[in-house]
Length: 65
Ligand SMILES: [Zn+2]
Image 1 (cartoon, rainbow, N blue to C red):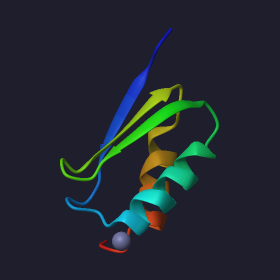
Image 2 (image 1 turned 180 degrees about the vertical axis):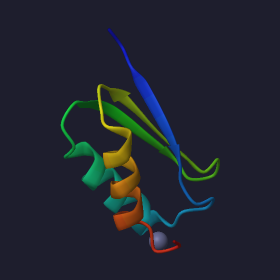
Image 3 (image 1 turned 45 degrees about the vertical axis):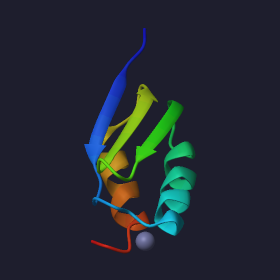
């Protein structure tokens, strides 16, 4: 079964944050693939992941929050 979770990220997240966020999120259990859409302000993850863990990874990665 394919599950997808999306959480908002700051619009126009800088490249450094995108890299860091990708790194953090790819380390979370259950992540199959992920996509950071900085221009749209969205992080989408495929796989069975904990939403709270995603939000926590986002908060750790972003220099704009
Ligand atoms: Zn940044």
